[in-house]
Length: 126
Image (cartoon, rainbow, N blue to C red):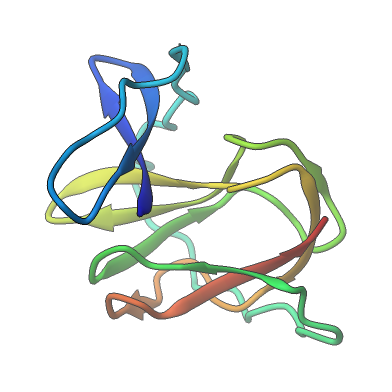
């Protein structure tokens, strides 16, 4: 089984998909996080924060793109669904959200950085 978070018209659904193609009904919808508007002039890329103690929960890129904005700082308390960072994928701003409640252990990318699908973006601890 695989878990996916899907956003449809601003409503976020957590969906579990079984390998045989059968899907379970979506869980209760929740409000999608606000996506910031593009800046008129891009800021210089910031250096990635030290991973000095990577967390046990890995947050990876679902597709290749560019880091548009880092929303959460290392050490920040986040809840499931909170935006950690925003990727620009195929000209669309795509929020990368916390899969569980916890603390951001490391941010492994910087704004403006290009990332490949599966790249480690951040880590968390429960």
